[in-house]
Structure formats: C-alpha cells, structure tokens
Image (cartoon, rainbow, N blue to C red):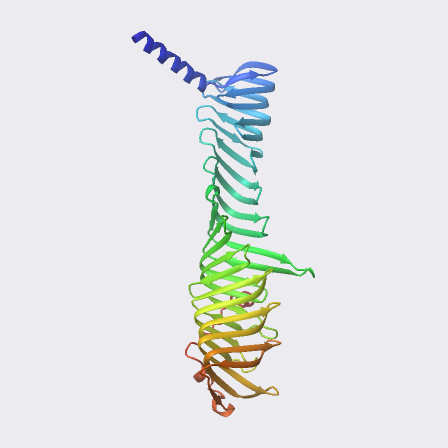
Length: 416
C-alpha cells in the first residue's frame, strides 16, 4: 500500500514538474551559452515553445535555465485558448506564467482587439495590463486611454488617464480620467471629470453639439439603454442649457429626465433669456431637437420681457407647465393647477404696465418668440397695474416663486 502511495506521489510530482517546464518544440538551431553567470540556451529560426496549453512562437529566443524566463524577438506570438498575443519583443516568466511585450503589443479575443506600447499578460489569471497609447475596439465602441487593466473571464476592465470612449451606434463620445466596464452586467461608469459629447449634423451641414458634464457618469446597455449623470449636472446644446442634481438620458427614446432642483434655459426667436424650473423636468427631443418640456411640481417659467428694462420678467407658475416647441423655438406654454401668469404690456414698443392673471389653466401662445395671446380657463381673476405704478418697482411685483438665475451654463462659458 505504501509503495502505491509513493508511486502515485512520484507521478504527481513528475506531472507538476513537467507543467512547470517550458518545452522546446522546434528551432532551426540551438546554442548553449552563459549570460551574466547563468546558463542559457539560444534558439534561432522558427522557434516554437510550449508551456502547458500555451504555445509561443518567435524568430529568436534565449531561455535562462535557473530563473526560468525566456526573452523573445521578432514577431512574437502567444496563443492561449481563444486569445492571441503579438509583440515585436517580449519576455516570458515561466514561474508566474506571465509575458511582457515591450515594442507594441496586441491582444486579440473574440470580437475585441487591444493595442498598446507596453503590455503584460498573466496566463493563469487571464489578466492583461496595458500602458501607453492604449486602444481597445469591440463591436460597439472604441476606447483609448493611458492605462488599462482587463480581466478576461470576468469581462471587467479599468481604464485610467485621458479616457475616451466612442460609441459607434449613437455617436456618443464619453471622456474622463477613470473608467470601469462590467460587460456581463452591461454597465459602465466614468468618474474624475466625466463628459459626454454628441455631435449631430443636420441636412444643411450645420453641426449641433450636446455636452453633458457631471461628477459621475453611468451607462446601462440593457433593454432600456440610458446614460445617468449624477451630481452637479450641466447640459449645453444650441438653444438649450440645463442644470440638475440627476439627469437620465434615454438615447434610443431621445428624451431627458432632470431631477433634484432642475433648471432649463431655452432660446426663443429673439430672446435667449428664458428659464423653467420645478421638482422634475422631462424633455422630449425629436431628431435631437427640442420638442416638448414637461415641468412638474412647483413649476416656474420666467422670460425676460424687455432687453432694455432688464429687471422686467414675464412669469408663469403652477403645479405643471408644458412647453411646446417647433424647430427649437417656443410656440405654446400651458400651465395647470393654481396657474398664475404675470406679463408686461407694450404698446407700439412702449412700456404700458403689467397684467396678472390667475386660473385653473392658463395657455400662452407665442409669435416670433414674443407673447401673442394669453387665455385663462375656470376661476379666472385678473389685475392690471399701470406703468406709472410699477416703473422702477418691478421687483416688488415679482411672484413669490420668482427664482431667476444668471448662471446659465452656456452663458457662463461664453463669458469665460
């Protein structure tokens, strides 16, 4: 019985030793040598080496016998199950089953290609580390960064430094300094100054750019593809700016939901000083152009009434405000539930006092960005304030919900 156990143990040790040995399958020539006091073998021409299930080929190799490492040159290729690694010069460490590529390294997996100036791959862990001009391409996107760590089995990647991800399908480009991708979960996130840019070109060749910045950017590619921006969110686009604590952008639905103290500024025909706010704002786009904005919960809409008298603001408040746009220009504004409107009057361009109207529902229509008609329905009350009464005292007549802000993102950036 003891002899059987010893024989089995001996076979196990032999198998383990064989697994640890890098075997030479072919070389045109073999030369024994000594380098820095260590015995070595030099292989030249069509070199083929095997370590377990890993196959390595190159033009020239030096195998260091005691340190169990191999330097390789000339179109080095490593094949391990479905992975193919290519570099011009590399070093294989037999004890840790790790290979380094020093002059351009490439790893090919099914549907994915990774390139960099330097790379390190751990065969047992199936883990890759890249540094310098990192480039990763799959069927959906292209990523570039300074560094990347990739775990093949977990399909988990971490990129750092000047990260840029270009999504081919929806023309979204995401920037940041730290990126994590959980491919199995169809989830990724960007931190450290994340920014999203989407460029559209209209039929007349004019480019329209959407920019979103925040503290955290998360992307979900499941049944409802969406991008979630969190904390200090700012959105800029031609004719539209927004701020919020939380933004969800549904890329396929062409819609945006803003929460946590959201503010939206939009441009009218002759006036870019228009602001809406509330507890939540839902923006519906049509081919990336502003179509409808739904403002719910303590909704407030404000627009500057006069470019000369800059302290005069038309104001609308209610529980819900719906803004309708055509070609990004305001056409109609509906206010529901405890609706109140305050708007300044003009007679042939001359200031002519102010009206204040309340009702269950108020509709305001626009022509060329200017108020054309106001209609109030149910429980309507109205007041008129003559010009001599309000002149110089406009702030005293502002509605209690008045919350005008001068820090619109696009306007602030232009000033800078």
